[in-house]
Image (tube, rainbow, N blue to C red; front, side):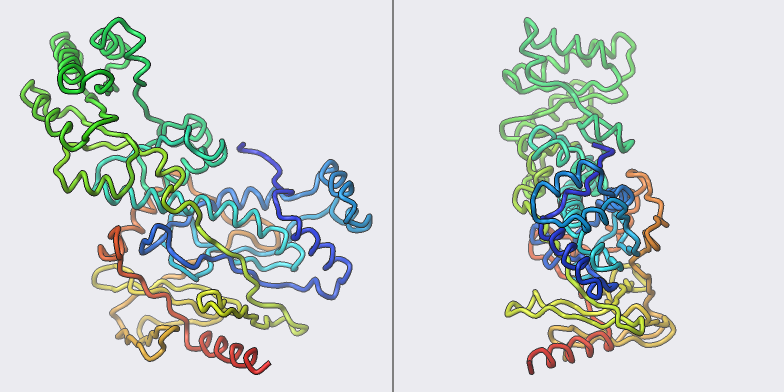
Length: 484
């Protein structure tokens, strides 16, 4: 899974279009494609970028092996000269991207591809497949972690994920979004992230009684002793037997460094409060109470509001599948074509659906922060050659309702270019950080969001504005297309 040639992981029409451009070489001009999304997942106020490392690996290994060409030839739709061309195919373009772990918003380019159209077209499917999936799960994880208000979230949805790739790369994305560990051992090996877990109900059931099962487990793992207490009766059997084991450990001089119980069924708020009282009265106020059982951000938020005494949460199915919002909706659209003079000619896609009208041209993104608070004020999509000065006033306007304007006074805001270059002339010029470093960066990014934007229901949206120059180009193209 960590090393594989994904060249044929593409839609057939990418290859048929490639052959068309190959046969009509004048059409194989350099273009710009933008990958972006239109709506935040889960009705939220933001998304988290993830998957760039796998996109980079895909581009690096993009080549047609002999068996690939043989298979394509067997389809009977590709001509021999085109198949011969594919033997030496390599990506030769430039790629820019929003770094992994970044907070991002609708309609701004997550990835920008600048390459001959044959190459730019081929990579569309894989880029969207990778970025859509991991960004979705990273965003879901960030929401779940926000609901937990600082409690640890462990990802353990592998057995419910849609296959090994989704389980493993989804766990990677969940770590980026803020989880403290995953049950997925392969993810731990591939990406050097913490792996965590306890035991199953079957462990308890395989012993003559619950106490013996707990005692045996504690003897084996005294420094990570979280006991599952709901196999038979949580309050009458499970918690008392756990307390008995913890007492024996303490009397034997075994340090209780990380210990506690896990609840996996029943009324988690009620059971956790009762269990907390029992543990405290027995002299174990620092015992962890962890919980699982079909959790998501909404249930965790509700349990917190009910005063549940849970400080560690295991989230599986609803996180690894983003069950309530199972697709990210990223798209990949042509934004510009290079003219004979080397300059890019903006292109626009029209639609009766306003949100599907694209932003044309060669673009970049500035993130605008309020200087006093460090919080995000807005994002500005502008032309690639536009430059702004923080020492000058800045006028922002809503591109959908341009009469709505905001003037930022000089010295009250700061600017940061959001995208980085990852490929130049087909060569990778970017080193992906380790996953745990991306996670730390994501925590910093989350801190730049206002609480109103992070709330789970009806969040305040962050404005994504267009520069005046880009807006004028877009309106001109809309009018020109409308006249036609």
